[in-house]
Length: 169
Image 1 (tube, rainbow, N blue to C red):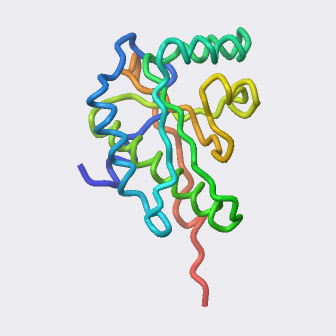
Image 2 (cartoon, rainbow, N blue to C red):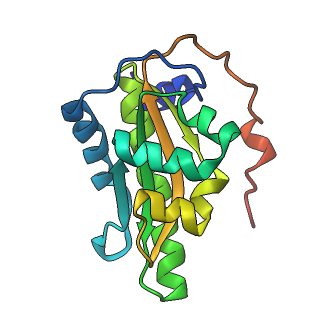
C-alpha cells in the first residue's frame, strides 16, 4: 500500500473491541516515531502506556463523563513532548512530536489496528498530569487509543488540494 493510500485509509475510531494491543506490537508501532523529522535528532517525543492503576487514577480525577470516554479503547498511550525552555526549539519539538504521533497512527493503520488521537481536557490540568506522571517540562499532545475496530467509520470529505495550496511568484 502506498503512503497516500495508507493516509487515506486512516480513520478516527470511537468504538473498540475489548482485546488490548500486545506489548510487543505497541513497541513496534512506537518505534516508528524514531523516523519523524526532529531538529538536531533530539527526539523529544515521550510515550507512556497506561496500565490499570494509572488509568484508574486518571478516571478518578477526570469525572464521570470523561471517565466513560477513557474506557472506549483497551490500550491507551499518552504522548508528550519534552521541552527545553527555548521557545523556538520547543515549538519545533512540539511539531516533531505531532509528526511522530502521525507516523505511529499510520503504522497502526497499516497493521489493521484502530486508533483515535484525543486531547482530553483532564490531561491539561495539574491533577490529570499528576495522575499519569507527566513531569514538569513536558507538554501533553494526545492520548492515543488503540484496539480492534468494532465498526469502520465512513471516510469524511476532505478539502481539495487547491483549497489549501498556493504557488507564490
